[in-house]
Image 1 (cartoon, rainbow, N blue to C red):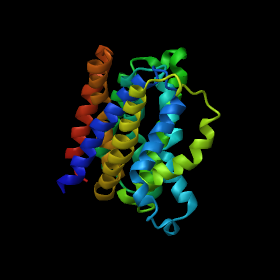
Image 2 (cartoon, one colour):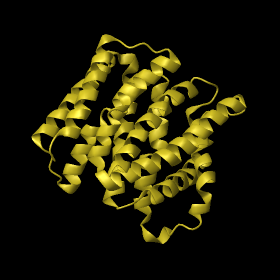
Image 3 (tube, rainbow, N blue to C red):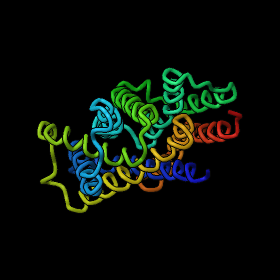
Length: 282
């Protein structure tokens, strides 16, 4: 039973690195649309042997769209444009710190899954810690747009996680559906966005292609779907709430972003809330 929890913890570190890598990427010559294109085309090339053998007739088109787009180009484009205006630590907070709240609401609405009072209190602590880690950016009008973009990204990702369980899909389904849906739908849209591919270096493109396309879009999606299949959406979303702490540390170490006292308090609160939730009775 430890394997699903190891998979969820692996996602924490992969996703934290993804936010830091993405923050770095959007400040190169690469545009958000370029990084998105590299992400899904690389993932498609890696999974192409499975795509031709996949039983596409098993599910309906709209089910593929919900699963594929929930963690697809709407999610990445919202995140990338927000990262142009916000620090990586803020992205870790506003997207992943909100997942337990949104995940709990979603499973209650769709599955009528009851949550104990102790776990509600833990989720409340995580939510309050998330507000602390925003460090007042809600009040900064120049960054309000980035804040709203990240909230929308959190909603997209919650839809993806809930859909995996609702449609009873496994990691084998996810790693095929996500790149296929996004390559088909986003490739023609890419021509409508500003691009910097011809100006960017091969090094920048390779870094984004490998991390975004292979590590995040194949390995991380496998880990997320595997963990959801075995321990449920709410538990996985609680693990994801630890991403803010890891992201803030990664951003401090690799990007030189500093942490305020409020952000440190939020990191501590998120960590305590996660442990509290894990130790609470079901």
